[in-house]
Image 1 (spheres, rainbow, N blue to C red):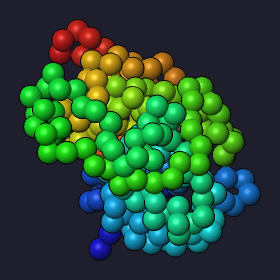
Image 2 (cartoon, rainbow, N blue to C red):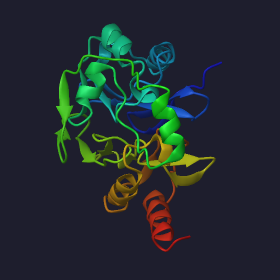
Image 3 (tube, rainbow, N blue to C red):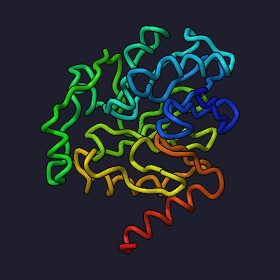
Length: 238
C-alpha cells in the first residue's frame, strides 16, 4: 500500500512517492480550492500522486500549477504525465529549464570519482514542456505566497520554496533528512557540490516553523534551529 499524504499544516500535504519519505512531493491548497504541486517524482509517480489527490478530496483538474525544484529524474520524471493529466503549467528554475525541455540531466561535478562514472553512463532525463521559469525572490501567488529561493549547486537552477503563510520550508535537494539526520545532498549527484553547500546556508537565514524535505521526513519542532545547528556544525568541521 502506498503511504498516504501527510498533512504538514492547514492546506499543505507531503505526498510520499517512494516509501514513507524516500522521495516526496508536496501539495499546497490555494484560497480558491485549487492546488499547486511541488515536484512530480519518478516516471511512475503520477499514479501515486493522483491517488493522493483523491485522498485529500481533489481531482486532477484542481491542480493549477506544477512547481519543480530541479531537473533530476526523481523530481521531474512524472512531470509530463502530470501536466497531461491535470492540464497544469509546469514551472522550473530558469537555469534548469533547458535541461528539462531537452531531456538531458544537468552536468555532474566530475571532480567526484562516482560522478565521473555516472556521467559515463549517460545523461538522459524524462523531458517535459516548460510553461514558465522561476527566478530568485519570485513570489508565486499561491496560498499567501510561495517564495522562490535559488539554491544552485545540486543543479544550476535548483530552487527551494518558502511557504510564507504556513511557515513551511521545502528544501528540495539542498538538504536531505535521511533517517531523521540532516545532511547535504550527495556530492556525486551535484553539478557543483561546493556551491550546493554554500547556498544551503540560505536555508538557515529565512523564517519557518517546519522544514520539509524532498528526501526524508519533515522536522516539525524547532526546525529552523535544527537546520542552523547542522550548518554551524559543518562550518566548524563536525
